[in-house]
Every structure is written in structure tokens, then in C-alpha cells.
Image 1 (cartoon, rainbow, N blue to C red):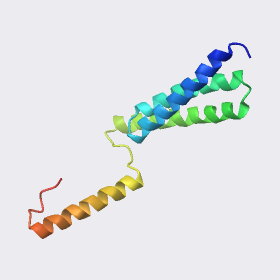
Image 2 (cartoon, rainbow, N blue to C red):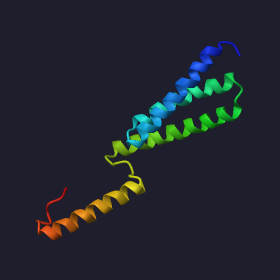
Image 3 (cartoon, rainbow, N blue to C red):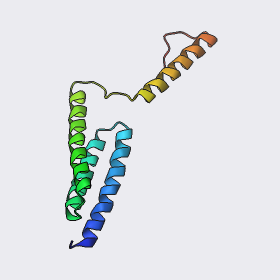
Length: 115
């Protein structure tokens, strides 16, 4: 393999893009899908250059999943829908609203007041 420093740098760039893309996805931003595609675009040639065939298959599949996720996200935005909220987030919101309603009953506040 020639250009060892290039492939080493590309591997580190791919790692950084992977972390950044995952963090962007946790904030429910569509940019995470694009960043992850850039990550896959780095890992695929790296895998070929280093003969890491399992890594190649891994990131080819992840690239397809990221394209699917990005397209689904765009369709939802176009339709005016909000992306699905993870179950843990739904449970947190339900617990907050139950606490809010309980507080309002205790203090006798107007039921129409919402956070």
C-alpha cells in the first residue's frame, strides 16, 4: 500500500466524521445523515486500500442505511411531520406532563396553562 500517511489520515478523518455524525443524529438533526455519508465515503476507499473487506461491507451497508434515513427524514419534513421521538424521550415528556398537571392541581392553577 503506497501513501501510508494518506490512508492513516483518511482513517482518522473517517473516525472523526463518524463521531460527529452520531452526535448530530442524537440531536435529531438531519445533518447527521449527511455527515455519516461523508464518513462512509472515507471508510470505503480506506477499506479497499487496506484490504479490510469486512470494513468495506460494513460501511457499504451503513451508507445505504444513511441514504434511507436521510430520504425518510426529508419526506417527513416535506410532509410537515416531525421525526419520531425515541421512546425514552416520550417517557420523559409523559413524566414531565404528569408532574406538571399534579403541580397545577395542588396549587389550583388554571388547567389551560401549559408549559
